[in-house]
Amino acid sequence: MSASQINTNIQAQQSLLNLQNTNEELATRRERLSTGLRINSAEDDAAGFEIAAQLEAKIGGQEQASRNIADAKSMLGVAEGGLDSQLNILQEMKSKAVQAANDSLGSKERDAIQNELDALTSELNDIAKNTSFNGTNLLDGSVSSGTSDLQFQTGAEKGESFSTNIAKTKASAIGDSSGSRTIGDGSGNFQGQGSGNTLDARSSGNVKAVKTIDNAIDTVSSELSDIGATQNRLSFKQENLETSTKNLDSAQSQIQDADLAKEQTQVAKLQVLQQSGTAQLAQANAASQSVLSLLG
Image (cartoon, rainbow, N blue to C red; front, side, top):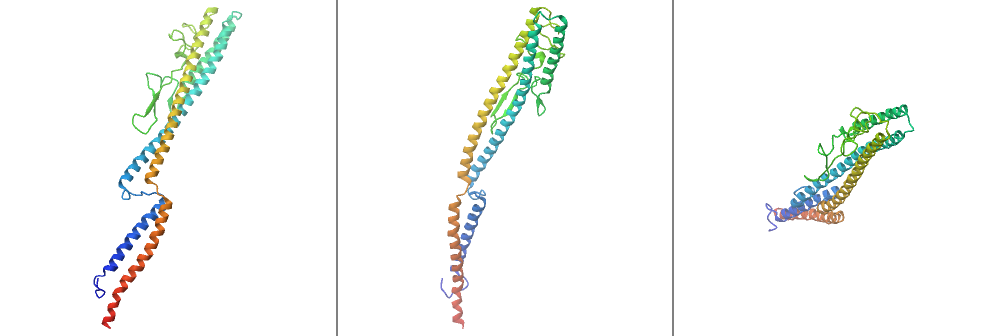
């Protein structure tokens, strides 16, 4: 541009454009320093923004799944506590049944044992009825096999679930495998021989009662073992989720997070360019002032 032209100052316009670009870049770098993120909007990196958003959703889902597993383990822990109490009662009943099987006892003594067994049977039923988690009964058959298995969402995607069930442990549901002898008769009374709810005065009848209680103990202890195995599986799932979440966090960080040392270096450079650009714009604007000397 000729120094005598004043309507169009190309040097000043170019200096202004460069200064505006420097200011915009400096603003971007400062935003990254203030947020710690390289990608703050889709404009910064469209593909990276989409990938980071998907990773963030995946991470959030896995973190919630991990909390789901913790809740599931808590639920199973409640069931385990109820079963432990029932097992203690059955062990006490075993002692009483063995005592009643001894012919050194008379009818009155056996009646007293029967009353105690009836009370313990009622307590078995109370535990089965009242053991619940968030309104879900756990030991009364509500979540038993073939009825309504418990479903736990253990992953961030559809289909990543885990199901289990808990056996019904009411007194009328535990005994021998054929179901001919059960602990309770359905009314909260002890029933050890398959008919009536009183101990048989004969030794053989009381031995049947002992056998029935033994089978009930097997049922409850087996269920406790199953719950323990389920809790172990859930623990492994939780550990796997935590590892996966950590790896996804790392991947998201590589894409989205800013390198603060690099950004600070760029800011220092841009600040120098900003000052230099401002000075050059001032000089370009002043260049046309020389024309005034021709008009003097």
